[in-house]
Amino acid sequence: MKFTKFKFTDKVLKGIKNAGYEDCTPVQEKTFQISLEGKDVYVQSQTGTGKTAAFVLTILNNFEDSRFKFNKRALIIAPTRELAVQIEKETKLLSSSHDLTIGCFYGGVGYKLQEDLLKKGVDIIIGTPGRLLDFQSQGKLNLREIGYFVIDEADRLFDMGFFPDIRRMARKMSPYNKRQTMLFSATLNLNVKQMAWEYMNNPESIEIASENITVDNIDQKLYHVGKKEKINLLMGILNSELPRNALIFTNTKHQAVRIHKYLVNNGKKCQYLIGDLPQNKRLATINDFKSGKTNLLVATDVAARGLHVDDLELVINYDLPGDSENYVHRIGRTARAGKSGKAVALACEEYIYNLEAIEEFIGMRIPVGYADDDLYEKIENIPTSFPVRRKHAIKGGRKTSSYSSRKSRPTIKRESAVSSDKDKKEHYKKHDHKGKKPFTPRTESPKKKYHEVKKSKRPMNEEERLEYYKKKYGDSFKINDGLPAKKKKRSFVKRVLSILKK
Image (tube, rainbow, N blue to C red; front, side, top):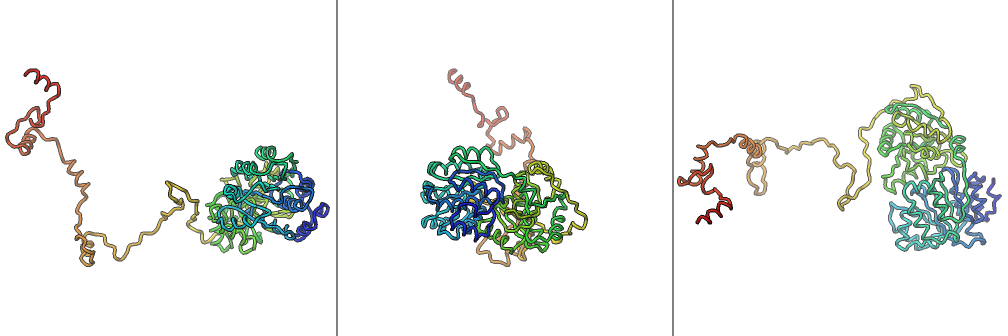
C-alpha cells in the first residue's frame, strides 16, 4: 500500500518523499491503521521491517492532528546506544519539513551537551533508560510532559534487565489514558504482555510472522568446517564472493579481535565492534563502515540490533549463536526493507549443537554448501597475540583494570649490570655512591646457616649439662631433679604445706 492512501499531513508526506519511501511495509500498514487514530498498539515484528518509520511517522502526524489533546512531546526508548543513534538519524530525515528539536541521550559520553539540549527544549527525546532516568532524578527531565511514549525492542530491553527501569519511568508519566503508547518487540513474551496490560490503554495487538523475513528475502547457506580451518574458509568466502560490504559475527569479544587481526594482517580493510570499546570509538567504527571507508566489520551481538547499513550484501556467522533469536537478528542486518541479501554460517564442532534449535526456530533447514579445497585460502602473517581491553572494576575503593598489565616481556640485560661479588666490588670502587657503605658480599644465607646449625644440635647428656650450668651459674650451684636449684619452682600446695608445718 502507498503512503498516500493514509491521511498524513502535507508536512509528513513531504518528509516521506525526502526519505525516498513509496510503499508501506506490512508492519507499517497495519500499525498506521490503528496508531493514526490515537490508539495504543503493541507490535510483534522482527528487525529490518521498517518499524522505526511506523512509530516516527505516527508521532509526527499526531503532533499536527487537532483531534488529539496529548502533550506535544515524545519519548522513544531503545536498548542500545547504536539503536538510539540510528533512530535519531531516521527521525531527523523524516521530520525534515518540521520545525522540531530532536535529541539523543545515552551513557558513555559527557553530560554537558545533553544537559544544554534539555535546557533549550526537546520535542522528540530518544535514549537509553539509564541516562534518561539519571536526568529525571536530577530534575532535568520532566516525564509528566510526555504525550507519546514508544518502547522499541522491548524484549531486548527486558533481557538486559531494564524492565524495572521502564516500569519506573511509566509511573512518572501522565496516566495511560492521557498519552499514546506504542510498544514494538521481536517476541511477545510474558514481560512484554505484562507491560502492555499495566501501562497501556487497551492496546491492540499486531503480529508479523518471522518466517517470511528470514526465508524469502535472504539466501542462506551453511558450511560444516573444523574449528582450526574456519579462518581459512572465511578468507576463501570473502575472496570468492568479493562483497561490497560484509558483517562478520562472533560469539565472544576475544574472537572478534582475533578475526580482525587475521583479516588486517592479510590485506583486508577491517574493523571490530565489541562492547568494551569507548562510545566515541564505537560510533566512529560504525560511521566508517556505513560510509564505506572499511568494508568489513567483525562484531559481537552488540551490533545485532540497531545497526542499519544500506544495502548490506553479506552477513557471516563465524560462530553459530547460542540464542536462536540472535541468529534472526544477525542475518536481519541484510535484506532490510524488502531487499535481498546473503547469509553464510560456519558450523564447527564447538557450536554445531546450536544448529538444531536455530533451524527449528526459523522453520526450515539451512541449505548446506560444499567447500572444496580451492575455497580454503592459505593464511599468512598469523598474529601471535590478541589483547582484548576489558571493563574496569572497582575493588577496595580503587579503580583497577582487569586488562593484563603483566605482559611477558623479554629480559633485557643492561650494559652496567653486574652479577658476581667480584664484579660488584669493582663496580662500587669505580662509581661514587654518595656516601653509602662499601659493599660487603654475603657468603651464605643467614637462613640457610641457621637451619644447618639447628640440624647439627643434639640433646646434651648429663655431664655436658652440668658443665653448661657451672659456666652459667658458677661453681656454687646444686642439681635438683635435673634442673638448677635457682630455677626450681615449688607448687602452690607445697608452699602452703610448708607454712602450716611451721
